Length: 334
Ligand code: NAD
Ligand code: UD1
Image (cartoon, rainbow, N blue to C red; front, side):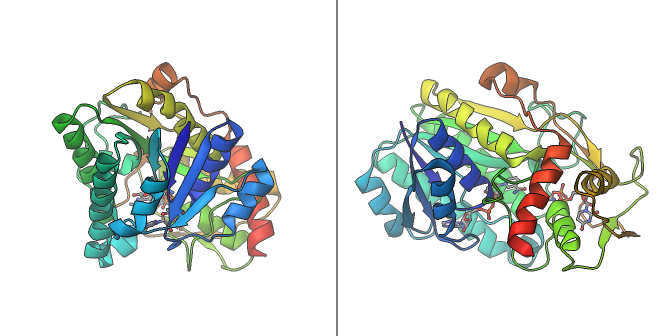
């Protein structure tokens, strides 16, 4: 089977490409390299023995994507390409709406034109807003997003659902990720955000390598066991495997299916700091700061539906996530 992976040189995309190749799929990638580097292809080759076919193409420029569809016939598309920085999306909403929404519309138009009507889409737990229930099941109502990035995910879920309603040859899988962290065991693939990171684990890694002096913990007065925010952190390799399992679903049904990809465990900010320190034997200095606007107290998944229907369960624990994050950071950031 041949799979198109958009955004395949990015953090989650690159781990998924490696997993796809290991499981015998043929992979073609396109990416505009806005937030990733072409050298990732060499790392994938080092891990799997195969350098995937790569096109530099942009979702916003339909003609740049056309050769990809002209030269290959795909069984399905896994669509990772998009912008994901929450703060930047507040400052530049049009940039986010154009890239993520108009870009995905362009992609779907080409998929229609070339007769590939199966898509697995990277959504996010952010679509639940302040969740109405914990743990969060897929039937939990969608909520109010606190930023344009979140709205692009919520709107794209609706757009893909509407495409299926208009033409039931379309098959759509919406994967709502919780908080991906960790890195490939080899230390070759991982997340290296530009500038000062916004997310917790990338920030901890910068403190661990000595590039930032301390972690600010955003609030210790939430209604959680230790007062700090609780999230469902998931190893990026587990997340990648979830996509591979979803291929069977997207190729064998003509439905819209939604799955949470999380572990079902909630850990606080201080749990993460303590585990990182313990596993890697490094001190992470921190101080308590005010709450960050838009944050919620607690968010973790009920992953039972993905287990029942995709046969997928997250296998790696928090210790492994912390160990692999540090293994990558040591190689890349020091
Ligand atoms: P990433 O930035 O590492 O990867 C995204 C890739 O898309 C990058 O390589 C970037 O260059 C590419 N891209 C962006 N705009 C493009 C365009 N117009 N044309 C072509 N390529 C383009 O991000 P990631 O963490 O791997 O996330 C992948 C997907 O998962 C994104 O859609 C993201 O919103 C979603 N997601 C991520 C998280 C997370 O915490 N990382 C959580 C939920 C959902
Ligand atoms: C954030 C985004 C979400 C996006 C996800 C992945 C917001 C409100 N949500 O999720 O839309 O899908 O990233 O990109 O931005 N924390 C600190 N100090 C830090 C950084 C984080 O204490 O320097 C805390 C946060 O308050 C939170 C937890 O760590 O309790 C996790 O934060 P983060 O990694 O940014 O993820 P989310 O906020 O869950």
